Image 1 (cartoon, helix red, strand yellow):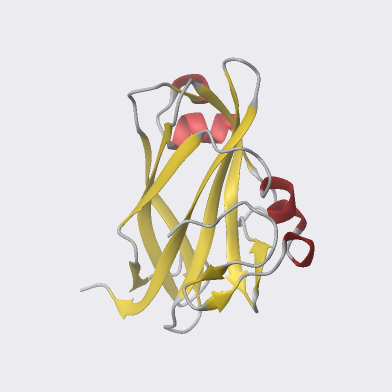
Image 2: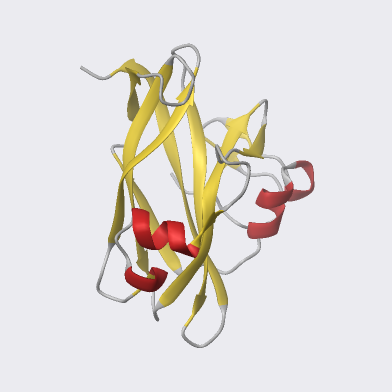
Length: 165
């Protein structure tokens, strides 16, 4: 599932999406950036595991892949925005966006430069929560093209209320 960057409420999985003015500042910041990256998650929906890595009862582990839709893009920041209480809320465990250096290391992407024809994958992304209930998070990536244009990529990861077997 993809979340549109257009202003105004959107239907998404049966839930009404808030207008950007009603959401988290990070969501409002990225909503109108043009798309220049394709982001995919696998599996989606992700099933829960019992794991205390997040300091919570359950963890949903998945991989995320990023590739350019056109010219090369150097990723400058990325993060997660969770759907909570009817709105998108910035939810990186650090409290800050992840950096280009983080992207280069976690996605095995030298200099955080995403080249056409190549897909870079973070194999162990995760979200945590107490209680076995469905959820979702929007993972976003912001970067600069070779021609200097600011672009983004985003995709929602669905978190299932089922345990992985």
